Image (tube, rainbow, N blue to C red; front, side, top):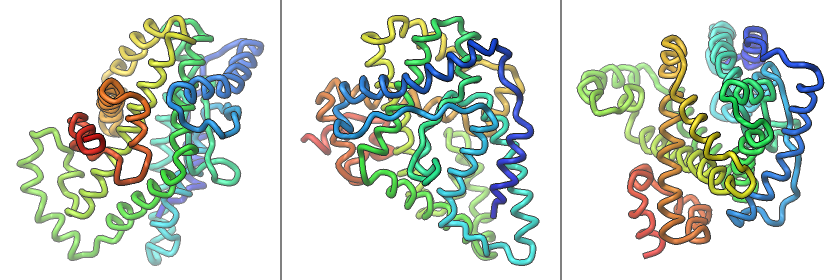
Length: 338
């Protein structure tokens, strides 16, 4: 249903160029980011206790078009099982092209903002890849006027935490892919009757809109909502855990971490009117709330039962926090630790 090659080429062609920097400075940033990933992951392992037996690997440093191409490839791998190419009938190629252009537009917007990413479905063998977007890291550290070596290590701490989440927790990658497949298959499988039911739920959804729940979420069927809730709870946990770790490790290895966190948090909330509108449309404001809610959950649990007690979240899908428990971490502690 999506022409991923067209999405990649569209996004790579439309993305804005990065900051102008001397060749030597650009080379230094690339080298720093590549080498710092192994150092950062060592610090994350020491704090979390995860992945002690895994090799320490460097990251892959890319420019903005490179991130677009990698993101499109990873999304294709993630959604491929749920959206087979045969769907769409005779209009399939036209629909896929339109979706490809729209996806490319979104990727071009995101490509100037993403600092790094661990894609569990990316890489040459599609076995996972840690990406760091050098021009965006340089642009951010310049805009915030922070110490470049500290900021680069701080970014690597966050992304290496994501890599460990998926490489040290062996079942997580397949669980995430299976949940996404169930959700996308259900949405893609709406028949004409399903569409009629969707329209029928619209008035009630509009009434509930004031409660801070998105229209798309309210229009989901009960089974889709259950999957969505599990995915939202998981992504909130993953992002918040990474944010907690990068700051918990930070004071020992990133001397200016408090300045970086303060300025970075302000930067997340900033931007012009057009930028804020696009962020809202793409759900990026909700993403920021995920960082905050997930970090609060992680801190509460670690304070209550220690890091070893927190690591019970990684035992199985059944020990992951529910969406309600993300907002009430004490409930998760009671369920897992009595």
